[in-house]
Each structure stands twice: as structure tokens, then as C-alpha cells.
Amino acid sequence: MEIRDLVFSDGPMFQRLMSNADICRGVVERVLGTKVVEVENIVTEQVIEPRLGSHGIRLDAVLAADGRTYDAEMQSYRKGRLAKRLRYYQASLDIATLGPGRAYDTLPNTYIIFICTDDFLGTGLPVSTLDIRCDERSDFRCDHGFTWVILNASEWVQMPKGLLRDFLKFVGTGRAAEGDPLLSLIEREMHHANADAAWKEELMPFLTIEDDARIQARISYEDGMAEGLAEGKRKGIEEGQETLAALIRQLLAEGRIEDIEQATADPAARARLCEEFGLSAQTVRSA
Image (cartoon, rainbow, N blue to C red; front, top):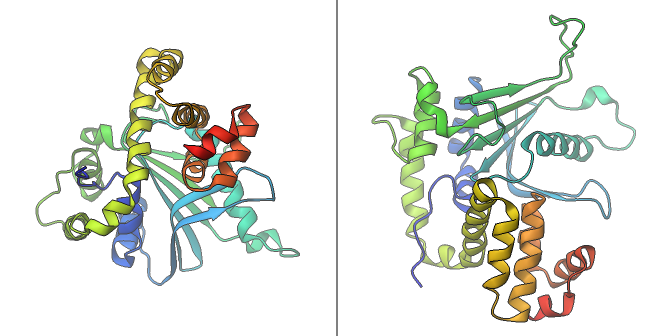
């Protein structure tokens, strides 16, 4: 089976490209309008489990630079309530950063960036910056040390001309502005990655799940999740595959994308998740 070329908004491609320091720095600078001077570390697909038995997260790309932490996430389909997702990501990052006995003031300034292909937050804006506010005093600054920025590439035309508009247009359409150094670099690295047949072959299970998740998410948004689930059940042809599909649908409905990846790769994780949802772990193991 021929594997399609991946684009910037595909999770594996985004993670691979963001491991490139020049691209990662460039994306952060482009989105936040700030300067990243010294890159200390870049980690892609970083797994954080705040405590034993709690819901873990898998971060796309975490950049440590200039004493700050930047988390850049790519989201190409609806995964539950984005605002709640941001809340949990922030809490998880803080817990992972603050060691025992350390003062709260040692928490680094943190920036969480969600690059979305559609309006998953619901503001109708191309850029939305969320913050804590005081209802009784609008001019009060909390100085909590974190910033959340959500990009909506589907509304790039609302942006004034400039580098951020060019970036959003590229995410949304795949068309890069001529002469843009960052986008040209991304396109070159994408070409090299898509020419790596062995890497793409390894991604086949993920791509199948990711593409199916996009379809299921669209059905849920347009026609209601019940219809999507019923259609999925009718198409199950083997017990093991049907049970695994049911598990994936349950996780998708709750926006637990990291658990979907674990369920397809780790038999112990599949068994644990099946038990949680009352599904047959035995049939899922054999799928």
C-alpha cells in the first residue's frame, strides 16, 4: 500500500520537523513575535504522567530556551474541549517542572501554543491568546507566568499581511509565501522526510488511526457521534478488530489521543483501557 506524503499538520511530520532547532525556534518566534536566543533543549513526543495512575499526556514539541519553556502542539481535528486540554497541559508541565521542596517562584515562564487547522476553540479568530483575568479589575495583571496562544489556520485571511499570516496560510493551505526563509526550510525538510521510505513505513499504523480519527471527528461534528459510532459498529468484521475500534472510538470521544497511541502499541495499556470501558481485553489483545 502506497503511503501518502505527509504535510506539516500531520502529527509525525510536525514532530520530526520541530526536532530541528532552526525550525522549532523559527515557529516559536513567528507565533509569539519574540526572540529566542539560546536553545537549551528540544524534546518531541515528551510523555508526562503527573502521578502514578493519572491521565498522561504526550507533548508534540517542548523547547527549553532562555530560561523559558515553550510547548508547541499541532491539532488537525477536534479532540474534546480545547480549553480543558490547555488547562491540563499547563498543570502537567508545572508538576513536571517543580521538584520537591522548590519554591513556586522557580517555575519558568511557560508558553503553550496550539496550531490548529480549524476553529477548535470557538472564537472565530485566527489568533486567540488566553489569560487569567480579574473580573472586578480589568487592568490587574496576575503575573502567573504562563501564556496560551491558539492559532486557527482556517481563518488566515483575517490576519493583516505579515509573517504570521504567511505561516497560518501555509498551515491551512500548504502554500508557502515566496522568499520566506522559515517556510522554505520547512518545505525542504518535509521533502526529505517524505523521501524517507523506512520512516514513513513505520508510521503506517499511526497514519491509519490518525486519518480514521479525522473522519470520525468530522462525522461527530456534522452528524452527531451516535451515527458515527453506529456506522463503525456495522463495519466491524472481526471480533478483535471490532473491539479495538470500539476502544478507539471511546477514547476519541473523550479527546484522549495519547491513549489511542498507547492502545495500538502497548498490550498492557490496551488491557487497562479496555477494563476501564468494560470492553473485552482478550479480543483486543488478539487484534
